[in-house]
Length: 127
Image (tube, rainbow, N blue to C red; front, side, top):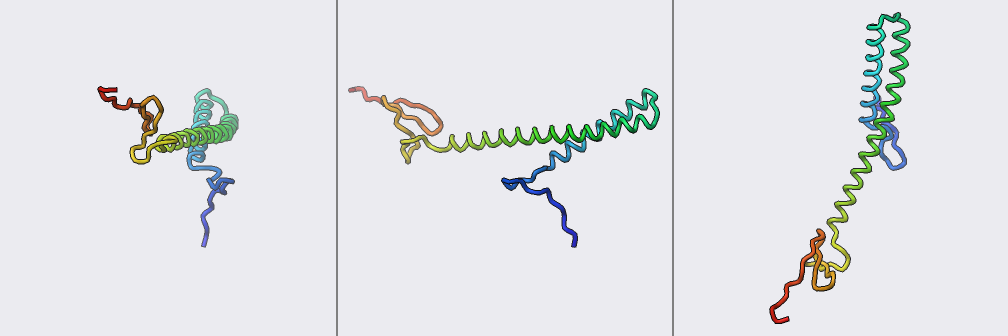
């Protein structure tokens, strides 16, 4: 009867910390720990100083990974929202559009379609 703990939702209902944040944070922490550990051992430092430096790098790497993942998630969400809004506006016909053809009269005998294409109205040879 144990329940899985889920991240608490934020105001808009999305989780406050997503999977990408946890993965990037963990990866950055482990990579920084390993880098400082190997560097210290190769330079011949004592075990205590290597572990001390590696643990500091672990904490700093986790914090940097969390910040980087948060920035990536926000930028990706903004870009996605812009693209979705752009598609919605491209699909809606302009004001004054003909419902049957989706074309709007732009004046001077030209029409504009919902995709923004402008075409001249056909002229007859007698005009």
